[in-house]
Amino acid sequence: MFPMKYPVPQSDPPKSPRETLPTMYDLPSENPEEPGLPDEFHDWQAQLLSLTFCPPHYPVEEVFCASDMNLYYDVRHPLWYKRPDWFGVVGVPRLYDQVDMRLSYVVWQEGVDPFVVVELLSPGTEKEDLGEFEPETLAPESTEREANGQAIEPHAKDKPPRKWEVYEQVLRIPYYIVFSRYTNQLRVFKLEGARYQELELPEPRVWMRELELGLGLWQGEFQGVERFWLRWYDAEGNWILTEAEQERQRAEEAESRAEEAETRLESLLQRLRESGIDPDTFLEGQ
Image 1 (cartoon, helix red, strand yellow):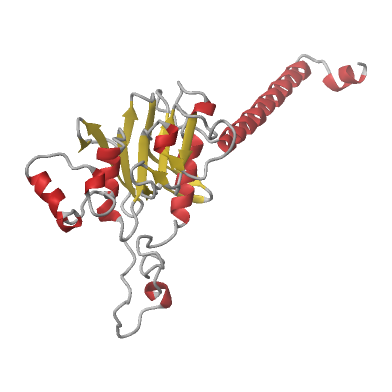
Image 2 (tube, one colour):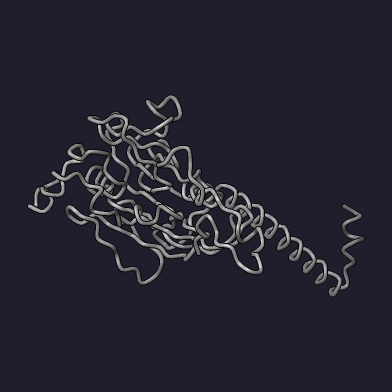
């Protein structure tokens, strides 16, 4: 459920502050295009996506992913950008010019467009994320051209194109993922020809054959929070582990091996005692 819109109507008796205090999504921002900075879920979900994004046919140094980073997409309008909640690129250096971390991703300098974009629905942005914008956002001449079946170039509009248009028509990103943490609904749009087509998902996961990697809903604990999270899985259907999970798994396996060795030793000592041999005396003589 999305938070209530501000101002909250008064009630009798009054509701508690917990129910009525506005969030950053309710109040206006000094930047009208930015309703608020990413919340905790946006940060942690993006971390989990980055930690498990490991396409098997690309070395680590040729995989780049980022969250809440400016994505500049049109060399003719170098100030135009979108800021995906998360995006992944393959076939580019992990570090810009193999030297330094990026401050932004500029497609005409990189030469490679993102392969997958994930948007996490927030109050006030869900319509744009799903391409449900109003017709009047298009310039009159663009609307007329669209009605005549002509292609609409992004730079022909009076203002920057919407997010959906950039992903679909400008960058032509193969997979566009939308996830709502309020409903745990995963929606996947795949570029088919010139337009995105929503995939029917028998279960909340999608296999990306081009990457040999899948993305799905995993229920578990991350950053101390138990819930449904988006994370990547491999060709065998196994969830890709973070480094911390791998280290914990190695520690658990080592502890299990130690316990098994101790059990075997105790079993051997018991058999010696049953055979009339005192293992303590035997060991003392060694």
